[in-house]
Length: 235
Image 1 (spheres, rainbow, N blue to C red):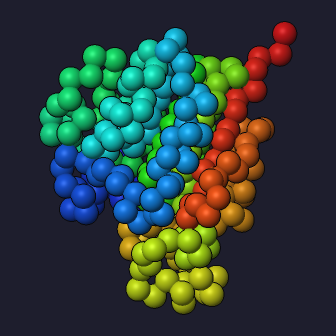
Image 2: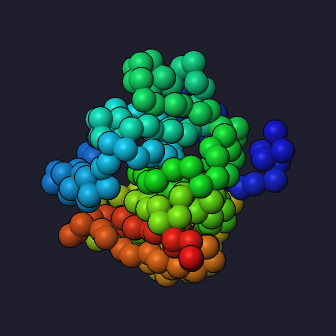
């Protein structure tokens, strides 16, 4: 329970209260209909039947079962939902290893360093404080093999307000108030989300060990889809 005392962010009960014990399923109802296919198109560039994929925040396992398990040799799926209840653990996918993390564990505990080829995360980092995102991305760097790649969705409230079909009450005032934004970066949430935008995303990434990253967001995407690559070992 050490993580629970020291770290900001939501715990497993918070997520269960919001989305249930079996895990959240991203149905893209808040996006324009074509965005799922656009994300899958980008994700498919990294499919490899000889590679191990790490998925951070698998939830109910939509991405895991439909897109990752069929296209990677092995999938390690992380979440804080109870292993005996999460929907993914009941699907009996032979190449998927589900790891139940402790509350506010942002270190990919249970995954060996330099053991995975690719990392995927969607709909997760938007629910984490900025400091937790930075810790998590550095942890991902450690778990990737040299030359390994990652595709991670991060929240961007400016894009969300511009392109999403759904908004939270009071969101417009948040976009104009920097002090209020700071409040929601760490110790409070805004409709279940922590504040992020292109400026804070860039700042977070500059503080990680990744030296190469690029925004690969689809056109009119309401968030930020970021590609990251771990440098290869120098000979």
